Length: 235
Ligand code: ATP
Image (cartoon, rainbow, N blue to C red; front, top):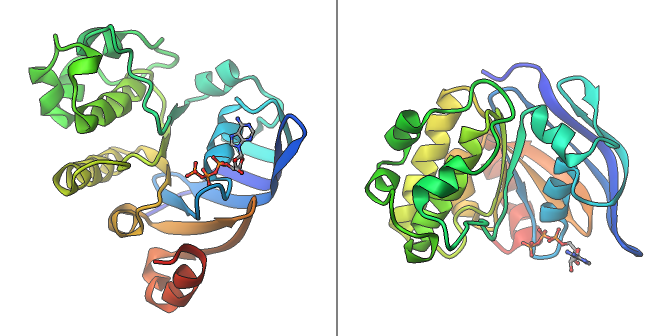
């Protein structure tokens, strides 16, 4: 069962230079939930995650995390509050091996998972410990990217299209991992194009269209909302 709001985003606006990208993003995430942002390419989902992480230069509106306003906080302050972002491009250091990639990010809070717990979640990574980043498969890179943010001590995880370009069997493993993290008390904000996958892990959804959140519903209300998904996502 979900608890109080951990993240409350109200009328979020964001700009890249002169380009006004987000025009009014409203949503909330409760403790222990998996919430998914759905929407077409270019709708503003990634920009929303980056805004929460504080890596978009110009933003307005309100982002409250753990009852603190963070709309003007720096990204390192936001990281120290326990928010982590796993980008779509994964950001694995190609010249470092798996162990080095895991040990590189700073531990910003107590509660970061020790390596043995990381390997319980991702047994493949243990076998690949001395493999260089470039030698990893797409699935292994994605697992490593998630594992790395678990080391930092963050409890609020933002995952940007973790299934992109991966084989169905790997996508299923990522689904199991997300379910396991949820059962361990992590809160997860997911961006997905793969609606089928999202529906296996999400408690709730929001639809992003042209820089706005235009709708939101729970997984239990899914069948009543299939028409909308058709319209907005072509699902
Ligand atoms: P995608 O799945 O393609 O990433 P998205 O919903 O995550 O889609 P965003 O990446 O947030 O969409 O992009 C929203 C809009 O912002 C798009 O029109 C995109 O072209 C624009 N945009 C993204 N990054 C930049 C940038 N660095 N500079 C200028 N415009 C950008």
